[in-house]
Amino acid sequence: MIKKCLFPAAGYGTRFLPATKSMPKEMMPVVNKPLIEYGVDEAIEAGLTGMCVVTGRGKNTLIDHFDKNYELEHQINGTNKEELLGDIRRIMDSAHFTYIRQREMRGLGHAILTGKELIGDAPFAVVLADDLCVNEEGDGVLAQMVALYKQFRCSIVAVQEVPKEDIHKYGVISGEMIKDDIFRVDDMVEKPEPGTEPSNLAIIGRYILTPDIFDIIENTKPGKGGEIQITDALLQQAKSGCVLAYKFKGRRFDCGSVEGYIEATNYCYQNLYKKDEQKMELDKHATAKTS
Ligand code: UTP
Image (cartoon, rainbow, N blue to C red; front, side):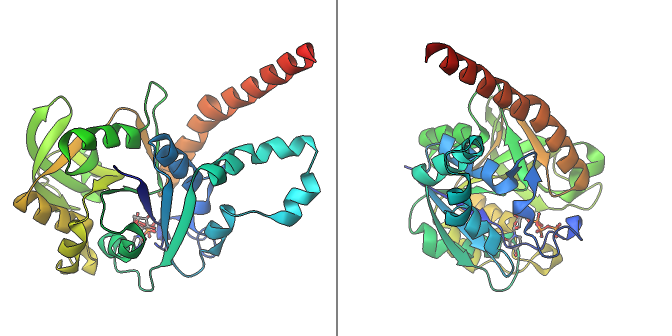
């Protein structure tokens, strides 16, 4: 059973400078919630309870966010502002958080390896919080992947079709389709040179990994950009066993880029925030009528 979710959150977020100079990218709000909280919500919805966060220097607000703030809570206690803390209180009641620091930013593969002490020897999920995923039609992306893992018991990467002009920004897979939307990976390239991409299927920030990945990463040499790449380790795993790629149901916003972040903000405001607000109003009226 998958119980833990790793959140690599030690990166510098350079595409969002100067906003990320002293604030973690994962704490940037989309409407009224920081990015990482959307990721944690998705993990809880998938039945995971252990949130393991890889942090770095200057990321302490991340840790504070999932802790009590006694002074603030005392101030708003009994006022109508208290309900604004409802969601984060529910998160803190249903999940526990552990943290480890990545001392040198040596790439996503290295960040995942840093999380080994928190994860232990069991399969686990990985969420890159700057990829915000929503699926209003049904299960969240991680829940879809956990269900797939129960069936196939191997590492799974979430993929999405990406236009040719953008594919060089991603890890790209190729493989044989073994079922609707499920591919058995036979090749994987990190940020391919234009014209060399093996397909238009780009890896996004959701993974299920089996724990043998840690030994593989330990033996993975720095790749593209001098960083230890999870794609290189996954290709190794695919060659010696099985890695699946899953074309998920739902939408994904690249909140590590300014355009994606604005798109996510507009979408979440219209489709999530306003609906929640309307529901809260209706609930209030219903309670007023019955009391
Ligand atoms: P990105 O490359 O998207 O994040 O890494 P970044 O480096 O923070 O962003 P830019 O490109 O400079 O704007 C993907 C994820 O991996 C984490 C990041 O925090 C992000 O969630 N990461 C990356 C680490 O935790 N450690 C690393 O050494 C590298």
